[in-house]
Image 1 (spheres, rainbow, N blue to C red):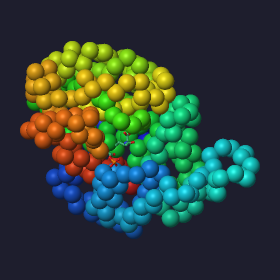
Image 2 (cartoon, helix red, strand yellow):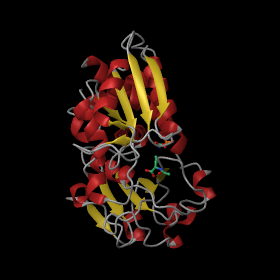
Image 3 (cartoon, helix red, strand yellow):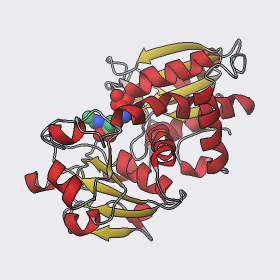
Image 4 (tube, rainbow, N blue to C red):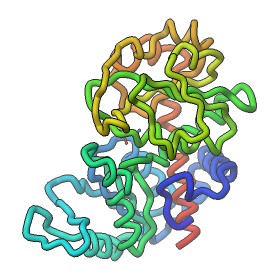
Length: 315
Ligand SMILES: CCC[C@H](NC(C)=O)C(=O)O
Ligand SMILES: NC(=O)OP(=O)(O)O
């Protein structure tokens, strides 16, 4: 595996999930796979889970790890031919090449600006690093996708499913801020290559981009969507159509215990975290026996370790 920025970089999902399960069972199984190799993690946006789990994964493989908060006033220029007489101090051409001198693998977190849809959906930052870095790139959540989260989500569903082809519902839920579409985009993209029956439910106006929703069942009625669900995956996202906008904060879309029991037949509850309690989902669900969000977060390490192992094999 050269880069890991979307489901398109995965040729054998079942094999990758099995590798993650094998690593989970024996975390130091490949303790020397990354010996004398360095992972550099660039965070243009904050992180708890992705930073800690990816660092842990790399360390478990014997790598050295350097994490950098790249959002502390170090602004990069991405435009070709730019006359750099404004705020940007460095062009991505140099930055990517220089980081590649220190790193065998580069992880990058770069959220969308949620202002310019074409720019965000062109994945300007992560594509520039893929172009100008000589080291492989692993996405730590980019403008439109979060593949490490999605692989952990696939692993979690595989561990908890009670039938071969479970029904998985990803449901929009209200939030107080405008959030990226990256997590739901990525989840949908990975569920399409997993063995699940997927339904997306959201209010009108919050439809995800066609490139993700093509062939996917969309249900505007949350109760209908929840019927017979085995997994409810809640997440907020801002509008793609009216890009970056909060069209509604309709509290009737909050995930409640009543819905989980009476609509979804006691489905498992999933969320990538961080989650706004009693905004996105009520306490009773998160504190209840069917919430698997902490186990889901634990799987971030094993998912990342499987990916890094695969990328190391390609060095
Ligand atoms: C894992 C979630 C990361 C990010 N969260 C925020 C607050 O932007 C998001 O919603 O995509
Ligand atoms: N789920 C997730 O990626 O969390 P962080 O933003 O804390 O890394």
